[in-house]
Image: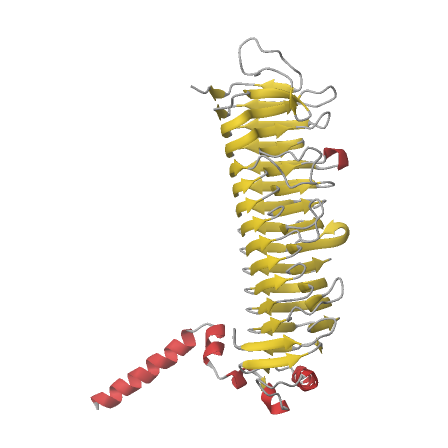
Length: 457
């Protein structure tokens, strides 16, 4: 009687545990055939040396017609281009179900198809070159397209290329691609979340639009490393995250390391938010908002190793209106990569031009300037308050060129700045003594208030 009671209790506990498991955990515990149509029933053979494109395409089409996922057991499958009709869902065993590309414009394509899913697959491009503007996974004009827990490797073009797509790219590993890991043009509502991106030749993630407009893509909690500027250029390549013409993009909580150019580059991207990112070892501007934009928040990031920490610029192109707050920026490089600026300048913690508040930042070890406000006449309404600047050649530089607007420099802690705590500039050239000392000349452009200044011993 006791044995039966213990048995019943055990069965009950096991049942309760199964009910408590999240759906994905339950799915992972099931035989793969339970998840949907078993691809092997269509004649698919794991490990076959033959190209199995036709078998896979038939299985995909029939599973989609039945509105069922297609389950691919562990193994290696050689395939060319596969087209996904509406409702297609391919499910594999993460790390064990591998599709090896045999050639074509892309491995997996869709056009005008909705409710698509790729989950738990390894997609191996084999280094086979793709046409320009193509990804190993290529989707055009679709809604609810989800790529989750996949590995995309050795693409001869981009890893994922989307145009006019709404959906979710999350939990994937994208590595060793010949162009960019993830490209989105004209997104309709896209999330790029918790992916690992390594070793790309162009950029890590590109959020692009064909013309300036609202985009709203969320790029969060990704790990991005080893991004090369393979084609060269002056900043088009070598960036971990690039938003171009895309408004209202949110870039937060990403870990970014070892990029030839920028960690995050917003170009003509209004209302961009760049917050809570951890950046190290980038060789140009770490966090960039440039050209024709209105509105940027760059806050609570850490930057350790860059030529410039933060740049909010191009007032001459309409770039204006920003908050730069609460960032830690240190160990800056004296030079940018060759070709990025006329004098390859660097060593600047924060550079701003127009309608911007710079507050609560900590900047340390800047070979040139802790903070710079303005470039020639391009300066308007900048407030620099409550910052800590240590060990910079100049603490704060303010443009005093005729025609420049006003910058307020007040209530900052400035320490160990041999050329001066606050200095007037003609473009990049210091032309005044330290404006914090008694008897220094006064300029309408530089409203210098009470700052705590500690001189070198």
